[in-house]
Image (cartoon, rainbow, N blue to C red; front, side, top):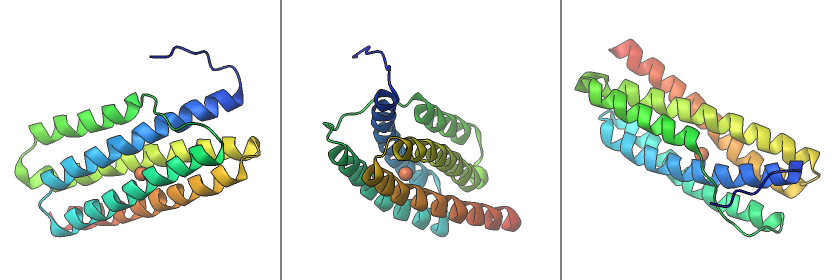
Length: 162
Ligand SMILES: [Fe+2]
């Protein structure tokens, strides 16, 4: 791996954008795993819908690289590997009746991490005068915020019916 030192806010923005690309690929994998673990049709539908959105988000990140004139590449995202590992561990320990709840809570945790990541990137892009990048990233953030609300509603429904 390239051990370059990040010395400017631009370096940091580009590196974090590369990590966010990996984050979205992890999200796509996690949504597939969680879709498999869930049995509730509403939960499954929400995961499939957000998987479609996540594919669009990955394309949009490609457009951000193009907008800032940087060749697209990825960087590690250990946090989202951890969120995925934690979900797998909990799913492995719990009885079937708890799997929907675990899947939704895990997806919610992932969304909140994504929201924080985009929030920071958008503030950085704006400070760097990268308005096209900022608008594209905002579209992804809006989808994550919307999804987190839907997940929260589904979680409330699950908890009240269990
Ligand atoms: Fe996402």
